[in-house]
Amino acid sequence: MSETVAPYARPATVLSHRPVLRDVLWPVFEASWVLYEDDDLVVIDKPVGMSTHAPERMRQDDAVSRLRRFIAERDHRRPDEVYLGIHHRLDRDTSGVLLFTKRKTANAGVAAQFEGRTVRKTYLASVARWPKGRDRGVLRDWVCPCGPGGRMQSVGPPRFGRARPGLVQAVTRFRVVARRGRRTLLELLPETGRTHQIRVQIAATGAAVAGDTLYGDEPAPRLLLHARAISLEQPATREQLTIRAPVPFELDEWMSGEPVDPLGDAEALDRVLKRAIAARWNVGHAPDETTAMRLLHGDGEGVERCAIDLYGEHALIHAFSDRVARARAAIVDALSNIGVRGVYFKRHPKDKSRPDEKLTPRRAVWGEDAPEPLIVLENGLKYAVRLGDGFKTGLFLDQRENRRRVQQLARAKRVLNLFAYTCGFTVAAAAGGATATTSVDTTRDVLAWGAENLALNGLSGDAHTFVDDDALLWIRRALKTGARYDLIILDPPSYATTHASRFAADTDYPKLAASALGLLAPGGMLLACTNHGKITWSGFRRHLHEAGRIAGRRLAQVKDMPEPSDFPPPPGSPSHLKSVLVTVA
Image (cartoon, rainbow, N blue to C red; front, top):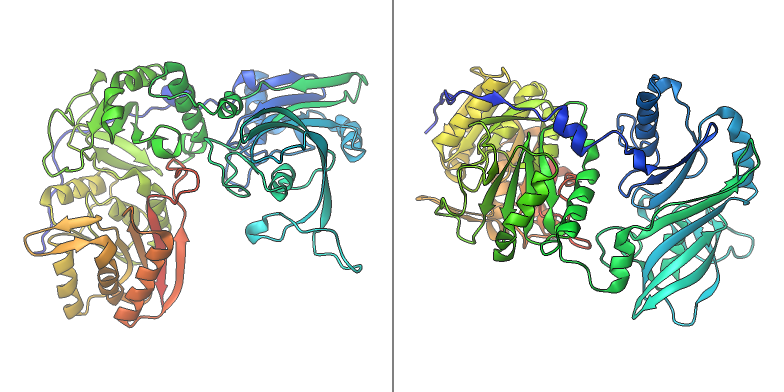
C-alpha cells in the first residue's frame, strides 16, 4: 500500500562539534611536527596518512597546505603569503623527515644538492623475509611504471639498445640494524629518487616492507617505512645540518613480534585511537561540514570486533564480542580523554531481533546524554539520529560517499530508493535536484523519520512519495505497471524475512537486481550495494552481470565504487561494503 507519512513532531537540537571538538581532534598542524626551522628551511616529521602535496585540487589535507596554514596563523600572515618549496616527497603512507624551503632564494642551493646527490636521506623499514647473509650492501635495480595505475616494477636492464618507457635505475644502500626470526629492521640510504623506490627494491629481493599492500603481503597496522633523517648543507650559512625524526613505536612493536593489546593497555589504546583520528583529518575538516563519521574501524585499525562512531560531540561504541564488551570502561576512558561530551554503548549479539536495554542502553554510559533526536551534518545536509534507539541510530555512516554520489547524479532524475530505511539517499537525491523520489520500506516509523529528514533540509513536497510496503512485492507490482526510474538505489539487508517474502543476499541478489534493472529507463543507473560478508567483489559483479542477463538489459558500464576512507578494511581483506554503479544502455 502506498501512502505519504508525516514527519515526527519531536523537537530537534543542532549540536555541532565545531569549532571546539573539531579543532581538538583535527588541528591544522601540530607544532611538535616541526623538527627544524630557520629563515630558509623548515623540516617536519610528516605523519603517516598525509600526502606531501594535494592529490586533488580541492583537498587541503596534504603537508604543504596544512603547514602553510599553520605558519600563516602562527606568524599572523595570510596563507598566500607563505612560500613553501618542494624538493623531495614522501609517499602518503611513509612517515618521517620532509624538507621544504621557505624562501625562493634558498631553492637553487637546495636543488643543487639534491641534483648532485649530496643530500643524505636515511630510512628505516621493518621487513619480512629479508634474505639471510645480506647484512650490508647495495641494491641496484632497473624499474619502470609497468603495473596498473603507475605501479612500479623491477624489470631488469635494457636489452639490445631498447628500453621500456620510463625505465630508470634505482640505487639504495642498506644495512641490517636488527633481526628477529623472519623479521628484520633495515637502514636504507637511497642514492636515487624513484617512485616507491625502497618498496619496489625490497620486493624485488623476495622480501616485503610490513604493511605494504601494494608490493607485499605482510600485514601490519601501517606501512612500516619511516624517513629517519636528512643531512644537507644550509644554503645560506653552509652549515652542515642533520635533522632526525623520532622512530615510530610501530616499527619496534612489529619487530618484537609481540604487539601490545590495545584493549589491555591504556597507552596502546590511546595511540591507536589517536592514529585513527589523525587519518580522518580530511573528513573532519570537510569544507561542506560532516559531523558524523566512523572514528575507529576496529578490524582495519588494530582493535578487532570494535568500532567507534562520532555523532557531533558524542561517541558511540559498538562491541561485536564479549572481549570488547569487557573492555568498555577502558574504551570510555580513552574517549573521555579526547573531549567528547558523552559516550553511548551498543553490544551487538548474533541475534538482533529483540533489542535489550542491557545491550543497548538508551542513555549515555558516560557524560551527557545527546538530544533526542540529535541533528548531525553529512556533506552539508542535516540528518536526525537517535543514539539510544536500539542497535541502529538512523544513519548508516558507511554510505556517506554513496549519498554524495547520488546527490551529484540526481539532477532532473526520477529516483527510486528501495529498502529506504530513514531515507538518507532520498534526502541526497532531493538536494541534488531530483524531479521526483519514491522511498520504499516495510516500516512506517522509519519512513516518517525519512520525511523528517527531508523537512530538516527544507526539501519536503509532493514530489517525494513514501511507500509503506515490502520492497520485494512492491517491485513486482511496479514492473507490471510499467513504472520507470532514472536512478535506483538498491541496498537490501543481507537477510530479510517478512510475512510475505524471504531474502538472502548471497543467493537472491541477482533476481532482485534483475527486477530493479527492469524498472530503469534507457540510460538509467542502478547503485547496487551489499555488506554481506560472504559476497566478494568479483562475486558481486557476477551477480550484477547475471541480473542483466535475467532482465534482458545490456549493461553499458559496471563501475566499482571505493569504500569511504573512515572504514578501512583489514590489511589484505576487501571492504565490508561493496558498491557498484551500473548503467544500462
